[in-house]
Amino acid sequence: MKFHRLSSKKLAAGALALMLGLTACSGGSGSGGSGTAGNAETGAAAGSNSGGSKSFKLWLGWSATINNDSMVQKYWREKEPGIDVQLEATQGDALTALNLKLNTGGFEDAAIFSRGDVVNSAMVNSGTILPLEQYFNMPDKYPGLASIPKKYLDAMKDKDGHIWSIPSWFDQNPDDPWPGWASLGWFVRSDVLEKTGMTKDDLKTIDGVEKFLKLAAQQKDASGKNLIPLSFLSDANDENVILSTFGVTTATAGGVIPVEKKGDSYQFIYDDPQYKAAYKWMNKLYRENLLDHEAITDKSERYREKSKSGRIAVNAGGFFNMDAHIWEVLNGPTEPAWYYETIPYPKVDGVSAIGTNQIINPYPGNDTYISKKTKNLDAILKFYDYTLTQKPEMQQVVNEGPAGVYWNWTDKPLGKWKFTDSNYQQLHDSGDAAKVASTNPGLYMTSSYSNEWYPWWNYDVTEPKGRQKTIDFTQAIGKMGGVRVAEPQDMVKAKPGGLWEKYLPELENVRKEFKAKLIMAKDAAAFEAAWNDFRSALEKRAHWSELKKEWFDTLKESSNS
Picture 1 (cartoon, rainbow, N blue to C red):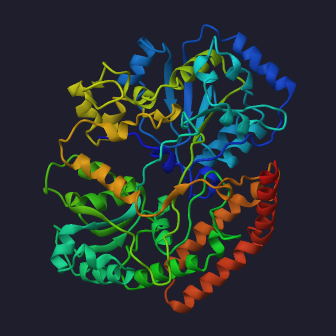
Picture 2 (cartoon, one colour; picture 1 turned 120 degrees about the horizontal axis):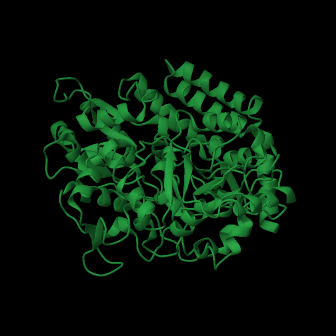
């Protein structure tokens, strides 16, 4: 079962969101740009020329397997909302693809990206997109768009009052938000644990985990190879779980940098001494062959295969990166994935609480931009008017079609549900990307969600039994201390034309470059040298002190506004 979740494709595009690879959601704000009356007129003209349009092309700001004749897309085309949505996925790096597209005339109709200031600024400054504020004030024509909470729209207005995107994947009630799920944790193979003679109680400390890794290194997989003691998907920044274990906050709610408030002071992620301590521990494991030497270079497919085939004893990171399908399709202990269990974050000496790695934020997580040159404006607006209908079950409707087509309620509306079309379910739950794509395009992020009903918790199927493991994992992790509600410091955004907008890409380059050097340093002396080079690069290349000063100025301005 592929559950609907707050950030599957959004997390896959995490490196794009804010260029940090540490967060996804944002508090929302239009980033300056060249908003003019002329642009508004262009938007009106485009609308007048597209009244009869019934189709449009949607460019996805992430990679995906595309089947534009999927069952749900057929329903959209033939039934409701009567729109043919043709998708185009991004190939390779999303920011590179975006820059190339904008520099060669822009996209054809519409583009959806995970929310981020870098993307928003690029879109607006390109001069290729339409301002959209007028369409949120047409309840007779576009009631779904008009129902978007005013709080979200107000936060998106630039200095001229323009709104440059259609927001989506937000909580329908910002005053009573859905509390969220959690996927970032430690996952241990219980069968390997048993073979070593240790128990989960022995893993309550980081020293206990290290002891287990040494014993796990002596165990064999099904093919007779020694197990990989610990691995994570660094390409998705899974090492953040280890940083959190050492007390480092790694999440924001759309802010430019993870910052934890400690009393009356603020602790920036790269200034936290535990940031160094966490990487020092990872380097120690790397040098002792307890950490997968391919963790830095592995891509998702390779990492998932290692997890599925039983090559890894302990995974740290997001369990969706491991691929929840590897246990969701099981009905018993027939594959290594069945034995995965989550454990509490191990205790580190001197760390009183784990660092925050997920922040509850009701604000939009995705933005859809519309090209000035589109001839299909009305089709785009009608589609989003449909997806943004403010009903608790709308994310389910957008992702799987409406109740009574491929799924239905098993007791009452807003109660339990299950699939009713066996062919759809078989393809949907196959774990084969092409087969899944034949059912639906996975565009739940064009909708919104609600605390009143969330499909994740209400799936009325217990077979295969492995499906319950995913729900158990997220419920357990959510109680481990890494999740909290957004605070002001989590939402400090980049000033249009400011230093953060200018240097954020280079800051991210520095982070990526030195996380690899720190983890793979050949000895303790090399680690210290890499650390000193990292601190130097922060200042020389990313202007770290200047960035922090602007951050404090922006925080002060926002608190006074």
